Structure formats: C-alpha cells, structure tokens
Length: 133
Image (tube, rainbow, N blue to C red; front, side, top):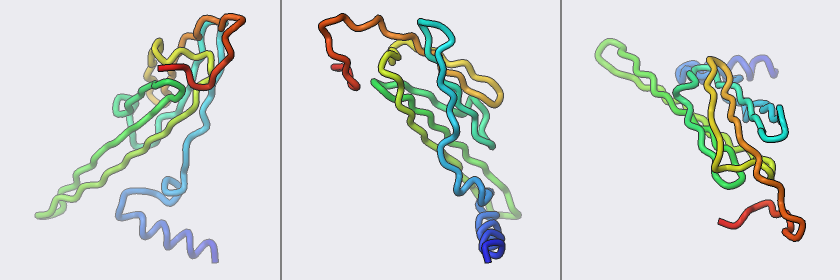
C-alpha cells in the first residue's frame, strides 16, 4: 500500500522537477557551535538544486533567515515551461550572538555564518530574549 502511494506521489511530482523526498523535506539539520569565546558559527547545508550564490542570508534581532529561489526554463517544441523552486528557513540565535556583526562564508555545499558574541551583560541588567530596538 505505502509503496504504491509513494510511487504515485513520485509520478505526480515528476512534472514539477521535484522528488517526493524533496516535497516532505523540512528544515535541514543545522550545526551551531562556538569555536572560541568571541564567535558563534552556524553551518547550514545548501539544498540540492541550489548553489550557495543563489541563497540570501539575513540576520535580524534574534533570528537567522536563509532564503533561496531559482527558476528553471524549459523549451519544449513551441512552449516554454518554467519550474520554480524556493525555500525559506529561520533559526533562532543564541542570546549572546550580535545580529549586527556577522559574516558569511559560502562553500559549495555548506554555508557558514560567523556571528560575534555581544559583550557580557552588566550585573544589574536582566537578560532578555529580545533586546530593545
């Protein structure tokens, strides 16, 4: 039963140039680590069908936003067909990451976002998940 359903789903999605696995795929496994006391690094794999140059990365307040969109054009006899692929992911950042100071390193299959840590909070200031604008 499941095999037939999976085969039918793949058949329906084949015209979209999208596999059934792509259809059900969510946000990727993200690796976040601190290589030293001043830096937070976020590693995100580039989805299949995209190059790292086709991916837009922004950081605002407490989130890392990663978006990509590509359009494929196919000429079939007298018709032109277009296939659009897009994704958008948002990941919360650790409180100590400074959203105003980051740089992006674009590898062929992995994006690395380097964020500097904020100076430590003063003793009388309560920590906040959302800093004032």
